[in-house]
Image (cartoon, rainbow, N blue to C red; front, side, top):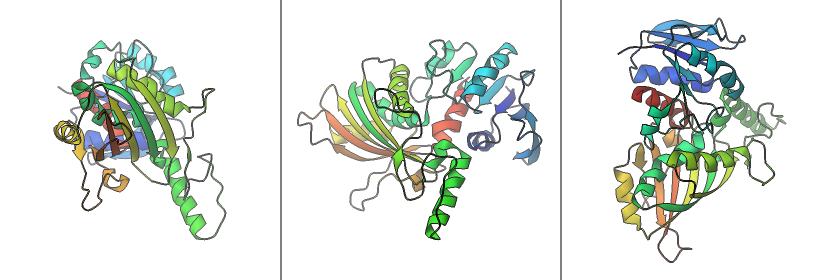
Length: 332
């Protein structure tokens, strides 16, 4: 079965990753339409040996389209997704616009694929940090229900888009040359620096990225009782996020049990070499489909045996965004 596919936000970092993954996985399609803002309309992008034109995104762009992969920003998704659905397309949306809408399934294919069936035209892709955490945490939760997660993220510039990645590069070059650098994309210089995630901080002291991890995990797991507290920061890494995850289970669990569960978990690759001090790293996770999981160890602050620590790395642009959406499309 083939389809007419459109990529909304085709010239952005995630949009271009969509094209790479669609080509690599030989996604069946009769046609591919690339959509973007007026600034990018008229450009061309390579796909399957051809140069495809980028068209201006309008409400009339979806005639004859069966599937839309959207990553053009939340405001544009709110504006154009309904038009796509009205035209008969199914939208897999990578933005935050519809994630917490009760009528929109929020899906990680390795976790809750059956929720795809409940869609009313739009299926939401979770936040990148949520996906990277949930892929390895879910198989553990199925075996031994999790009561509480404390997670700290180390988020790459890629999470803020292609412009932020370029800004990290320019900032590093400037500082190494002894020049002052004033950032324009991120609120602080990303080179040689760590700072609170660049989303708004709410009255409770948590930024939006942290609260996304809390609310989205509960929705994806169908578990409003699970306790999640997150601290999200930007680090001077070009691509791939890392996370330190502390888990409190309902029942005692051993390191060996965790390794056994994760060794057969879909989307997970164990990288846990204590002898050589080799564990998940962003450089190794970049361009990889799997979430790398290591530093598997008992939480010594929980003497009852119910605590486990993990460290994970995952490609934010790939599994944290584009790949997750394409996997949803494949299941459709």
